[in-house]
Image 1 (cartoon, rainbow, N blue to C red):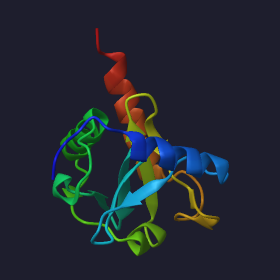
Image 2 (image 1 turned 60 degrees about the vertical axis):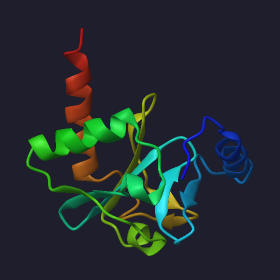
Image 3 (image 1 turned 180 degrees about the vertical axis):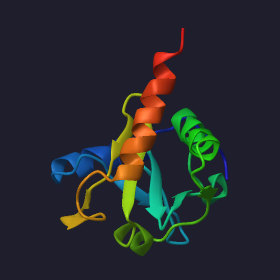
Image 4 (image 1 turned 30 degrees about the vertical axis):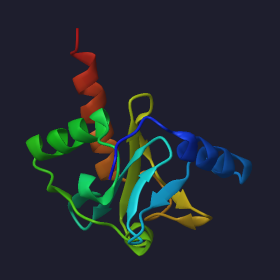
Length: 139
């Protein structure tokens, strides 16, 4: 794998998602594992564990992704990096996306199907509050 600064694939996928009525598109790798959004990193709550795809699956290592993993672990939330299949997302309790501009954004629907109960979940909301609190103490 080679890291490049060519984001043409991401831009085209983002345009397709937008023209199809979606706020974001998700990528899968050649093994069929979910890896990331067009401009976001993906997190899923399966049971009580926070799961995000590992870098080895081919995603970009977002700075907010790293901060969320550290924040979760420092607040007693089990957080791990493991490969995710699309059905893992559909069967998750909660999910959210991260990037530097959005911070933590709840993911409540995929192609018309609700994620969890279709509302931002309590664990996502808690992590979002912790993240915003952390930002407020920065100089």
